[in-house]
Length: 525
Image (cartoon, rainbow, N blue to C red; front, side, top):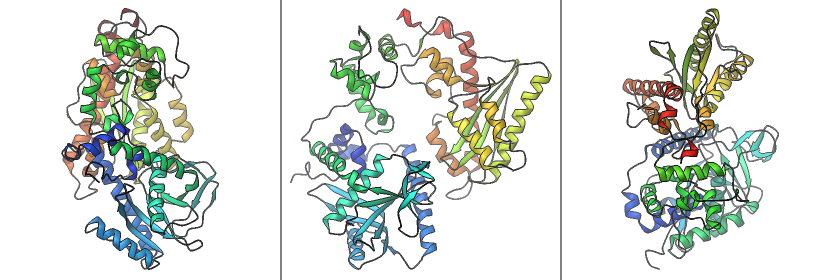
């Protein structure tokens, strides 16, 4: 077998872009030399910390009940140690590595292997740093410390195809060595780490086998692929290469990514120009989203317009007293910073409310209560003076989530508002989402994120690396998750947050004053 055909795939490839699978296998040296993505590194660090926390919890509960496959040494040696533990009948194995399979192309690791005392063989259990269940009922779960699956009346399954594919991958690898449990079940410990979600592999294996066969054909160069823009592209190391190819061909996925491009190609619309010339109604199979907006986006791309006005006039809600708000959170652990910008006719003042204790922490209740008290004072002061008041954010879903969550989690702490009070505020006309105002009044060919839209209005961030994913790494350093707290990173986070609230102010004022002069009207394209 040639080097080109001797490919080895982990389960992640089965939910990855098919063209990326081809590029990863064909140009491994380029992939190895690609710049490290800060967001990817941060996610890897957070996932490693979560895995270690789960391992510590399990080992503390039963120090003698585990076989640890040490992470040192070549993968082949770790795989042999794993097989030795299985053959010896170990009840629980942590850090399992399964032997790579040159013929099938599989390689894989499982945080946990549990011996199935009832049926024999082993059950793979993975530890992941995302939610695997949501509040509801009907999920099959079991306790962390004793395998006893039962229907859970407090949880429902949150679909995670990547977890399903990885578990099926591991099951097939165990099966090869006669070590798979005939029960055909597997488990996932997710964010929160308080139970194991049980997966029925009988419902997954056929899909897994088909996906593996497809990706192997691609990686071995036997099935051709081509670039097409999808959501994964923004974090892909190959995106610059693919984007250049797509731009040369004026590929329609640049303005209608994902399934939209697939629908258009079925109709023989392969280029942006073809979409811009479309005549007729919306295609019957068009996925979610406005088809008219897709046409306008194609025309804007050709014209080089960063935005297009839907209407001749642009409107945004304004008030006598205006406050801009931006919240910073660390994953699902907590909201550590509520940044505000209090604006008057002559000046603006940035006022942050933060905790620098690693979240989750009760000190988060203190900072949230101080923020809420300050915000309520501004609202009441405006009312006493007979002034109108409005608070602004950009894409309110995160702020709404943490406003409600904080009121629930810290109920009873000094100064923390009642849930009903928070709900009344976020349901009022005083809480204004600038993202929604942009969505309603503009077609945005390059995306609607604040970092895309605010520069059009003339705003720029001081830090060239500013962004949500980068801020996660800054936060870890700021609170000392891996060493001593770094005050410089706290300053960096505060400046980043301040620039975010200034961005919504600049954008709002631009929409009120200059947008109609700067941005073409849809009928003028």
